[in-house]
Length: 378
Image 1: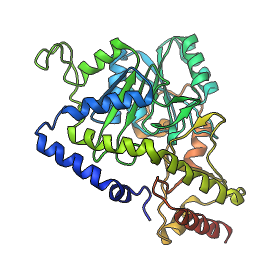
Image 2: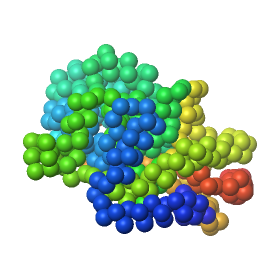
Image 3: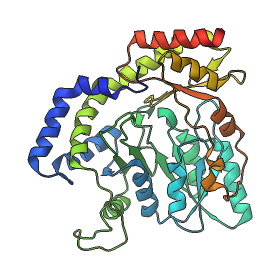
Image 4: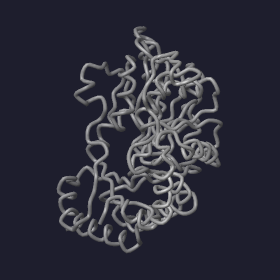
């Protein structure tokens, strides 16, 4: 069994993907070819924003947003303590200071109450300028943007939606990657919409920021790539990846998002009898998840390592996202803690992600749940 079966996806989409790759090879336009611009228009239309700019990866997408806002030394950027390293790494690379905030133990996303406390603590100290909050759509579920937007408006903060895992999620009729002043996503192969290498994108309705990010992604270009008006980056999406993503976006819209949510619903139903040992993912009313991961919260009595080892013997892969809170990473050992993050610490010790993807069968899910139940009960 595969954790996220990209081989099965390729077999399903093979004719269209092979044709897209062959057409790109024949075109000779391997960098910023026509499929790149076409994909950007399709992505902007799907998300419901004015501008989409693709780039080399999801981390660069975050960097482009921070550069557009001029984030730098002396600025505080608030980041959830339970997420992938890149969300805070980009802040430090710009010379700003990441301020780690606790998360909601049910949704795994940034906790607005903890954010309020962190902002107050930073302002009281007076050393840093609060400038932005990075809200991660963890495991495919959008953050609580209604609460976050109210805080950001009051405190005059930029909101950066890190939708690396969130593409396809929703709140009401509005889709993920449209909730931030700027939003980003990743096309890493295992993401909800993944390419066959690295890739990413930024989304915004702001014309000025879009123009700045377009410049930054190509060495700070002005009117042409040889008219360099600022120090930028080399962060372009290859034409081949754009062509593959066009095929995959069609599949994502037509059935993959529906199918992966069906798989999650099957998990929820079959795991309902194991509530003494684990909690299934919480999706608040009115929210939709892209189910980038299916992550359960184990009871504190369950030995996660033994459970993983038992499932591995049955050829069932599992993953732990993320075993170390951001504030406890070696790279951030000298970063001041403005608030405590107990929920992030508990989640790091107790979460477990099970296999899920749009091409997973009900029989696959039955097998995972049966073996999981057997190990937990015996």
